[in-house]
Image (tube, rainbow, N blue to C red):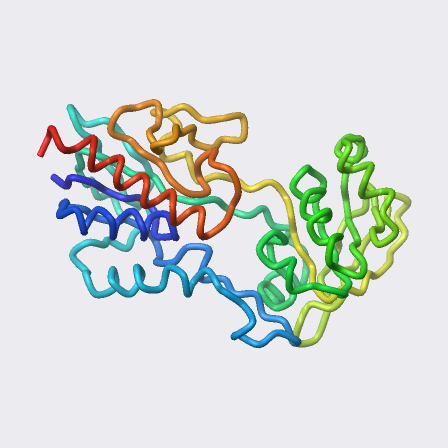
Length: 301
């Protein structure tokens, strides 16, 4: 039986695992990959690598350490977590069952996709899913934000402070009724395209245009230096959904020490209700979760 099993290999999971190893705990990280969302890198024709601090570089040391310490990782998706007497069982996709006194869930989120032509081809080549991370790169550029909810409105507002122009494609009338939505509608450098639908992402080497269909059926194209798909994130919390408390968005509720509603289950990173989807925040939360789990384990060691 392991002291800790960490589910997820993104910034939170990597950090939690390394912190647990340094506490001399018997820990295993179970994940389908190493790096999580940091494996995605936005490429832009006018940006050189030295101009960008990338998430992958921040967690690369932890990732390299785990690549070396093969006994501390198991590369396989997790299907679920159940209680097993006084411990927990982590069930893997291949049918395996791994036992641990403590589980740290750092399984991250999934982005909702448009499922339109050009989306896969241009992903991370002028098209991405995080305006908050990349907005500073678009000073005096034209940008497009696609989405119908609060996330799209907040992302458009972030870009509007630096970009020459922002096209907000697809917001609903209800989300535009908010104070931020009204502020966006009043900005001269923002075009709000209410109830419009994206039909394709177009370009050559990079995404350059967005094909849009209006509510009246009219087709048009938007030219943009960068396009952001900003629809609500889907937390990968289903593996513990029957065990711990979730919020209205399906995120795992945690306290200031990353404890869930079930003693022995901790959570960290984007899968939780912690503020902001950022690599540095996820890494910090992973460290907190490991230290909190260590404190929990001390009487049991």
